[in-house]
Image (cartoon, rainbow, N blue to C red):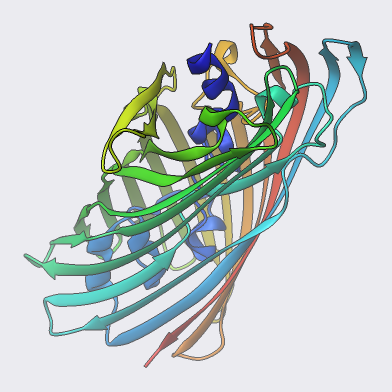
Amino acid sequence: MKKIITLTALGVILAAANANAAGFHLREQSAAALGNAFAGSTAGAENNSYSYFNVAGLTKQKGTQVNLGGTYIIPRAEAHDIYGANGRNQDVNNIVHAAIAPNGTISHQLDDKTTIGLSLNVPFGMITKYDAGWAGSDHGITSKVITVTTTPMIAYKATDKLSIGAGLPIQYIKARLSNTAMKQSAYTTLEGDTVDVGYQLGAMYEFNEDTRIGVGYRSEINHKLKGDISANASVPYLNQDISARLDTPAMFSVGAYHRLNDKWELMAEYQRVYWNSFDSLDIYGRDTTNPYGSYLLSSTPENWRDTNFYAIGASYQMDHQWKLRLGLAYDESAVKAADRTPRIPDSDRYWYSIGLSYAYSENLTFDAAFTYIQAKEASVNLAPSATSNGVSAEYDNSVKLVGLSLNYKF
C-alpha cells in the first residue's frame, strides 16, 4: 500500500508538461526558423540561432554576431465530457498556461576555419493547472517543468564543403507537481531540481553555394532530481526527501536547403526524438537508518515512444530588405492513446507557419513568425485503483506561437 500511495502522490514527472511539441520539447529556439515551421533548420545558417539545431552552421557566421529572441506560447487545452467518481463533471478550460521561451546566441569567428559560440535556451518545459477539486485531481492538478540550458560551442571548417561542430549543453531542470492522494484525502506537492551535462554534434555539407544538407545530434541528458514531497496529511512517506531520475531525450535531425533562384528557397526537415529512453520512473526515498543512503521507493514502467517530426518550407525574397517565410509540419505524439494522462493530453499535431525577415541594415536584421498548431482530439480513460478515483475526458488542444528576434553583426 505504501508503494501505491507514493506513486499516486508523485505522478509521472515527464508527463508534467505538455506543450507545442511532442512530450514537453520546446522546439522554438529561432524566430527565423519558426517562420518555416523549422523546415531546413538543420541545414539553415542565416544567423547563429540555427546553431541549436546544427552547431556546424556556425562556420557560415562571419565576424561577431549576437541573436536575441523569444517565442510567446499561447496554448489552448480544454477538457469536456468529464466523468469521475460522481458521474458527469463540469468542463475544464485553460488547462495549459501561456509562457515565454527566450533564446540567445553569441558567436565569434576566430579565423577562416574556426568559430566559437555560446547559447542560452529553454528546450523543455510547460505549465498545466487544473482546479483542485476537479474529477481527475488524483492524477494531476499543477504540473510545472522548467529547463534552462547554456551551451558553449565550437565549429570547424574541415574542407571547403564540409563543416563540423560540437557543443556541451549544461542543463538546469526544475519540476513541481501537485495532486491529491488516497482518493482525495491528502493534497501532495513534489519539488526537485538538478544540473547535468550532455553533448551536441553536427555536420554540414555544401554541394555548392545553392545547396547544402545538415545533420545534427543532441544527446539525452540524465537528470537525477533531488527535492522533497510534502502533504497536508501526517503520512511519513508523503513527507520526506526524495530523488527521481528524469532523462531528457536524445534528438537526431537531418535538414536540406536549396536556393532555386534569386527569389525562392526551398527546405525540408526530419527529426527523430528518442523518448523511449524514458523507460521507467524510479523514485528514491531517504533511508532513515542511514543519513547518506536512499532506497528505491517505487519503479514504474513507462510506454513513451520515439516520435518523428516532418517539415517542408519555402522562402521568398520580396526585395533587398524583406523576406517572406512559409512552412508546414507534422509532429507525432510521444504518448500512445492507451497511456495518455490528464497531465499530458498529448496527440499528433499539424503546424502552419508564416514569417517575415527585415534587413534594416547590413548589420541589423529583425525576424518575426507566427505558427498555428492544431492537435488531433485526445481522450483519457483511467480506471480507479485502490488509492485513486478513475476519470475519463475528451481534450481539444491547439497552440499559437509568436516568435520575435533581432540579429546584430559587429
